[in-house]
Amino acid sequence: MITDAQIERWLREDVGHHDVTNRVPGETTGRLVATEAGVAAGLEAAAAVFEYLGVAVVDRLGDGTAVEPGDDLLRVEGTTRDVLRGERVAVNLAGHASGIATRTRTAVERARSESDDVAIAATRKTTPGLRGLEKRAVVAGGGDTHRLDLSHMVMVKDNHIAELGLEDAVARLQERTSFATKVDVEVETVADAPRAAAAGADIVLLDNMTPAETRAAVAALADHEDVLAEASGGITVADVPAYAATGVDVISMGSLTHSAPALDLSFRTGE
Image (cartoon, rainbow, N blue to C red):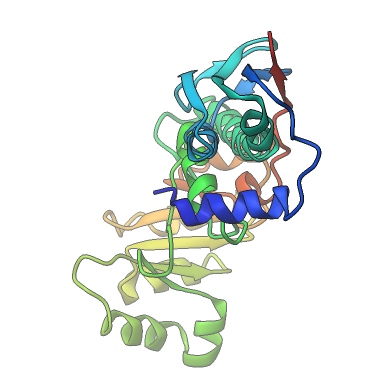
């Protein structure tokens, strides 16, 4: 949910307390236009900004729509002052989200060249305050959100294992979870993958392994049919086919959200 409080913060940051620039009289129309090919996302947020300012959104694409240069993503009409005030925030939100959706779509398509089943997932490496926008953008690109926050799944990571040991860490955290909460255990060696499964992991995260090591770890998990294998750690879009071919169930990538370049968009009024 995009709240009025979020929109107010976004606008306060951009408009400030003495906006002379946008004191333009009259009424106008505006178009958010793609200037490069990609996948549209963040349009709900962009529309919400204009609507908060009393600007009517007369048309917008659905998130996940492929766009080409010159395509309209969103059209508005209202007072010139308020259209101009909403412009930069809306363009920034939609451009950022569309960049994430575009990168995710590329990763999914590359995964499909090797596997029809492997999921491309995001991580919690998101921009503070923008996680909802960024996770929705991943979905728009065909990816999986992974955990939305710490409460959605237990992850037993390297620091937990360093403090408690693998088996004790899993047991301790399982005692504190609901029956509906899955446990994802991070391992750094092939040998630890079946150990994690035997300890009670629902998902074994194969961290920073090469494709060859990942393939070996997947084979080592063959006796644990209900346990999912997840590859993660520095995986780029270019790496995706090699990891998809290993037999993993999930490839999680922080770069979907923290390194995706914004899709280039332009906002044009009075046309």
